[in-house]
Length: 190
Image (tube, rainbow, N blue to C red; front, side):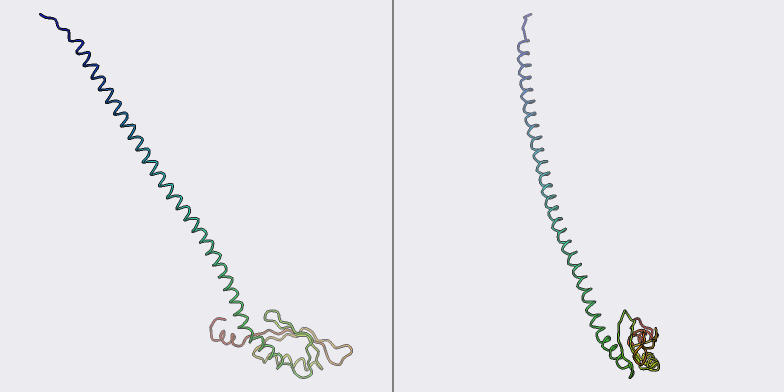
């Protein structure tokens, strides 16, 4: 039999397959590296887009916070204005009452009685004055008691005037509003 040596041919084939394998392996590695690079770029793009969205949301939140502060300031100013308007309305509403009270005081003072001091604290009217006699003081208290604008006259003191004829007196009386009293009598609220 003839002897043929096939080893070198097989060796060359093996070397060629090894080269092809390495070429394919390098190609796959390059393609895999490219895919990893592209995937990394894609993820970075998504992250960048999300960061941009987050920044936009933070910017809008700051804008809304400023608007909320402005709204709070406007509400506070509104409450202050409403409080001022309420005070003004109360003052305008009580203006005729005060005029009526002083008119009623003038009507209630009998002849021979002179006021030296008149003060109002809340609904209490404090009167100090001089009367020709104790009967005049009694008359003044009756007039206050019969008035629709006053109730509960209370004599604090009566003193004999030193050098003058007559008596010094001090009394308090409660101011009432007859319009509110009628509402209360009918069962309504003040």
